[in-house]
View 1 (cartoon, rainbow, N blue to C red):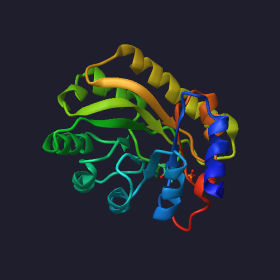
View 2: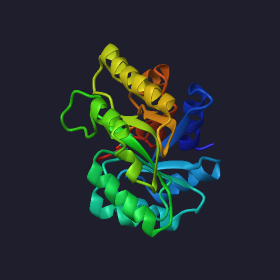
View 3: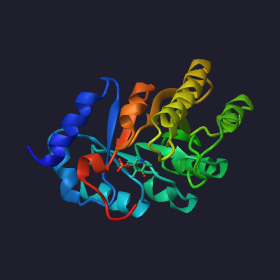
Length: 223
Ligand SMILES: *Cc1c(COP(=O)(O)O)cnc(C)c1O
């Protein structure tokens, strides 16, 4: 077994059964993904549109491609035909564009709303109140070609476990609240939180989708 597949197997053993592992393959070569795919892994994440499109074109078509990073509106059209789940929807303008492109391609695109839970200003996302308002004012309903499948968040990059757990825990509460309300065009089933450095804390707080890159594929030079 290769090191990549060993890492995937090890991490999966630590996850609850209903938790999906997204192998974040950004900056890594096709052959790394191929290797994991051949041993049965199907969910991969990327954060750059051009790289995602290239990998989609070169690799088997039954891979689930997750767009995990910040998405620019003018690039939605390139991934709209095939993307499996967009994790970081962080503005109404982006939703408008995703909805339009989904319509173009005759698809319903699965999306997660990104919630700003960290201290850092650089992380994108809605506030909790903005998310509630989106559903309560029936704004979300106008996006007929988007299915809102849950929430995504990134915790503060900190060694303070209590702080990080607290951020994950507040996201889980919001997720449960909205899931129970069952609004139009929602099908809340994914709570995407946890990366290489904090997925243990995230699953303790109820994550069912973790996005793990470096712990599987090794450290990256950039981003
Ligand atoms: C890169 C990235 C990850 C994975 O990060 P690691 O620390 O390498 O596990 C997860 N989520 C997003 C949004 C990312 O951009």
